[in-house]
Length: 116
Image (cartoon, rainbow, N blue to C red; front, side):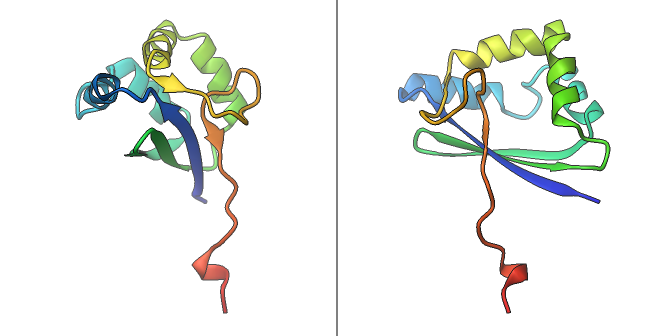
């Protein structure tokens, strides 16, 4: 069973920061250990979209995905921690984010499939 997750975070409102962030996410630019950690966690697809200063991540996960286990593995992985520290220079937490939470999960409120 596949599950979709939609997460949001803001980005620094400076053209140079936006350009740098996008460059770090270009094909082949994300460090291989970071990509491997994403795949190993049961994340089968991940896309990030930007509009203005808002980033939206859409993830598809399989049944093995466990957000708490992924967070613990990331905390113990020096490559992921280095990546997160680098991205932290560009990302801005949403005003309603819980302490320590960078990407805030959105709650689905509409599905066309559920409409009559």
